[in-house]
Image 1 (cartoon, one colour):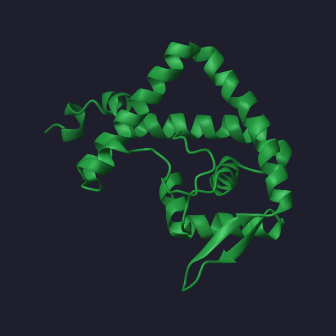
Image 2 (spheres, one colour; image 1 turned 120 degrees about the vertical axis):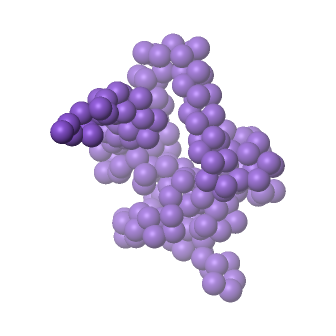
Length: 177
């Protein structure tokens, strides 16, 4: 009698799995950015969170979490050390809505984050080249959109906005990224 596992090419499954490839790539990218951000005492999630707060278009903490692709508990867990460090404060927006806002120290930190991010981003972009970098972004966007559609999380209009920041009239730049 043979083992049914003998008939399965498990290495092929690992090599071809979108989830496995995405996780490995995400881990490598996170380590790359974290190495750069370590000098600022931050990790990538915290830096992204500060940048999203600084962008200023989110009307709620839930919008920030949705844009970053994290749940509310992860958001709360990441806000605490930023608040303790004096980089953010919480502003009561009425009812149960509380929105994180940057302090003066937080604004200065975002400027440092931006300079650090530019260097880390350029290192990867230079290796990929402009066409390669754009192709990677396009394919990642297409993959996110496909998974959202398969999970039933998006309607047709939302499919067209996949990966875009929240759009409100209070956006500082008025541009989509």
